Length: 610
Image 1: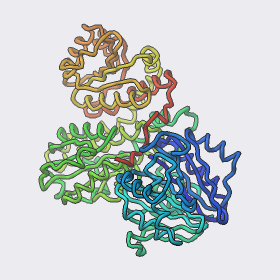
Image 2: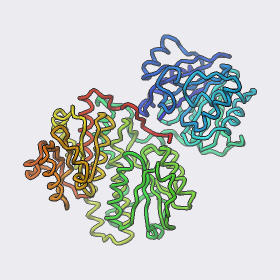
Image 3: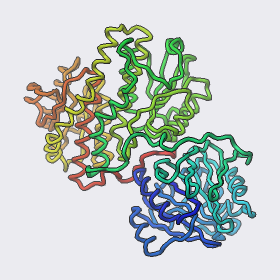
Image 4: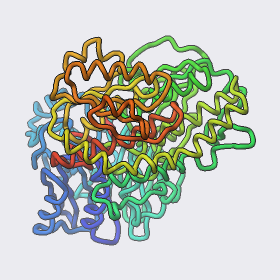
């Protein structure tokens, strides 16, 4: 979501801050700003819009100094304007602050401060905290930050400086990530370790309610009572994954990441498939075979694309392992009070490992005494560190806001987990080996699907101007229909909805006309004939049909207006293979409509607010 970068040391801060923000652009933002310090002066520069606008401003109005903080903002309170951009300052101009998260009781605090004569200059909740820290400041910035935060309800990752304490950068977190970095030129603070690559050699992740103080080469981390906290220092390379965060020859990160999927799926499987025992192995689950056999129920909790991966996982787990599964939106699950059996495992699915709703749902499950596991892409993230065990995707950094390779890797890991659970129960070694053989062939099947990119371009050109699209699939392909619709919505801004194909006649068919195409996911499978009947119902109402179908399927071609072929794979792997043309279709339509593919409007990569 919002990005934070801070630095204090023996080099000019401004270039470090600007480069760090550039690396965090993928998270989504609407404005950016930096503040640096020299002597007893602070130099504030901030602009609405893209980081390039701030870059031009800083070039013409330099921000000197060897310490400072910076921010890219994703609006929660107040529009995208210069005055709402971070950093924000207190009334005296001594304190400057950047903030990720939401201050839920900001209105109450604001009224109290206004009663004391404080005049607000922005519409943000963050400015309240700047004034509050200023109110309690008596020469000790760490103490003032700590005292101010005791009055705050909500979530925060903050970085604070004071011109009266030059060289000092203070950070604090609750529910919004912060990482401290140590390098040869000084110390760093960021909301994402990717911002520190090439600058810091070592990192420490802050836990909730911890406060850090950085000053040149010195750094310390304290708890909420300001006692020194015990921390673990790690090599930064360990946290940045194996992916390359540059576009290379690709015009967009999204396209690069779509084409990386043969490799990222292979990475997800590497070292985890056991041909001898016809099963999968995971080093990080931290559960014995006996504990696995005692699992009576699995609750999968996630948001967005990860939720759709969980829906596929429900089919996989129940098909292969015969374990009952419920898939819950994390934002809803965190506030429910459902009856949960003793032998229930909560499995959080997340790309970033920082999604606020998923993290809260996970913590609620832990509070209730249940085993918690996670499927996550970012090593060292909050969710990865707080679960009892889990599985990393090893997909490398995903920069495009619309998730692509994370989805296919998540489904691949869920398939392997289903195999693993199944082999501890009823699944025979012959069945297990057949599944392993299918998984080994999966990267080549994805490459075969990518080979039809030109065909996808032709279909995109035909339908780029429509305003509504239906996505229809059944069984394993119903979640894939939801994910295809989400991709189109996210980056092309076309209204799209996913449905089980048979449910279309129970209401959505009223939307069908000659201007509303339906994307049918209809590769060969057990319900092929049923889906073909649903397709005929659309055609009878003059609705255009785009079919994603098995290569060479003449029966589908005779009915559909346009066909995008995919290679044949077993039904439980079809969601991965059909995801490729659906991602490409959304990408190509978005290009034709002139949309910003990598940074779609209003969206953020990692949603760290509720």
